[in-house]
Image: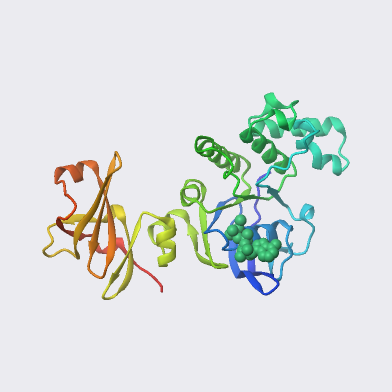
Length: 327
Ligand code: ADP
Ligand code: MG
């Protein structure tokens, strides 16, 4: 199935009446990448995904797959497939029949349908449930069936909208490992919508952070994490402090902060909370300008020189650990 087609959004816009849900976003998803659209509820992620899938009309701009404008093609003609948040399996059809359903619509014969469906079920590790009905499956298993059903159409791009949100935390972590494995195995692009930064960090080669209908920052996952470009991204991606200095705002990773004596440190503050987290200790201090800053210290570093709430501390970091933020 491997894909060598890039997916490109050009000034893609969605309006619902007067409301602007997606405001002219430009982004290139290189072929074969696992991309996460990350952002808070209501920022326009699902609208973007549904426009790519063809389940929502494009108000303005375009969607190109391998240079071909697919913006106005019906969903089945785009080379994309969508896995729905509600798995929407047919209750009266067996797992195999559900997976083979789109081939039936295309007029593929029964033996070929079954063979292809079983290949997909093997890929998602569901072979032994092939003859069950959806009601006889757990939520996680139904999800695997939905995934197989989307993949049988051999899409170049698989679109997933919050695919893990209905699963319990244990299954969620297991299933995200499976999604990553399947994406690697197939070599196609996945565009996965989530509001969870941990999910995006765990899965994505590329992260596209959205806020208020626009792309706030996009790039390789570690680059976005290491150098958030805006206060919003720094806060949303977590594990960063946004610190206002006379020369402007910077983001500094919590694990890049060191505790020192107050004299000569970049910031002077007072410890307000100490939280033991097992391998690490999160120490929060209030510093001048009514700011709170959190340092994530290894347990060894912290307990080498323990601090208590109320103590004066200095907070320091290496110059290159501070990333200037755009407004
Ligand atoms: P997200 O998936 O990031 O939560 P959505 O794309 O679902 O965001 O929604 C973006 C904005 O568009 C929200 O303000 C939402 O209320 C609005 N919206 C979404 N779908 C519709 C619709 N069918 N009709 C009107 N407004 C909508
Ligand atoms: Mg959504």
